[in-house]
Image 1 (tube, rainbow, N blue to C red):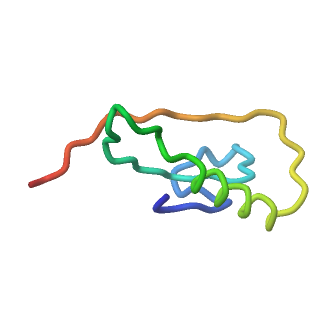
Image 2: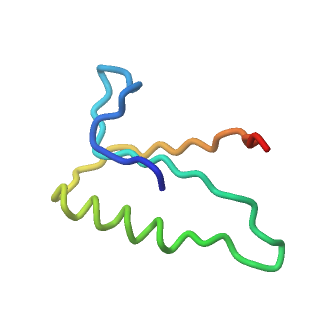
Image 3: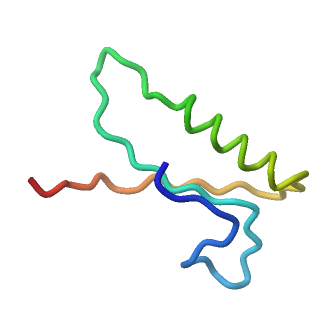
Length: 70
């Protein structure tokens, strides 16, 4: 996770965001699971610090793969 917060700099001003997280993942070997536990633990800690959340919707976005400069 390389960024997180309650206010997304590019969010629709009418959107009421509880929290957002930006995550980048390097390729994982086929014989290994995607290591999501550290991310979920961090997201849970952040949400706990915010306090009680009354969520009406959850949105997730799966981005396009990126290429890295060599």
